Image 1 (cartoon, rainbow, N blue to C red):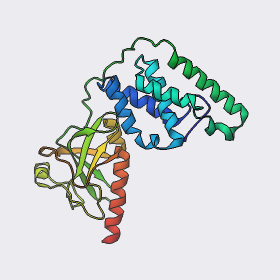
Image 2: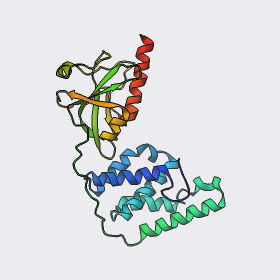
Image 3: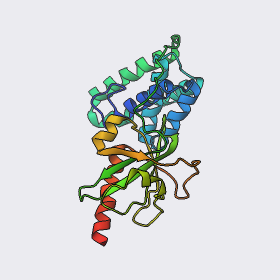
Image 4: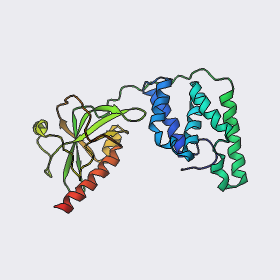
Length: 255
């Protein structure tokens, strides 16, 4: 848990829940769908007794402030508050911390039990021309100098929004291929050293790609996207490039 005080959003997880719900609405989801996306994205935290209350209370508070409090979110949050909320987590901080957190929870209860505001309009996301569209191929040059190619195979759910589905091209050379030859390069197959064969990116954007060191190099045919037999993982652009560095280290060590 990352916290910086007793406020409801002094907790990193609570902030993530709030932002994820708003992002889902701005991406076009309705109230129920946005809630479902958040619950799915934070399934691991919901299974953790220490984190469950944080997720549920932040979700209900965010919905209420936006005029979108659902019956299920309200019931879950009030049941947790009836059971004491998350005050047990604050015992280590002493009586003063517990009192301050209890005051936060009392205000939250009053908000959830009181009259709810009308839904607040949220500006829908406009077109995202900077996103990685299917068919594009990006290159990443590792510290060793070796070049790795990544193609955008499609788009898929990435928790609370959608992101590009990335597959690695089986390009062995240190240099970039001719863009006209990209269509002939097959996807990299599963290997004990390459267990990730399909990755969904959660922070799609030009700035994030450029910061990670990716460069657009051309286009690749986009066949129908079929599920990878090895499953998908979720990553940011920076995390994906860090993974490539680890694969590059293994390749050079094995070689």
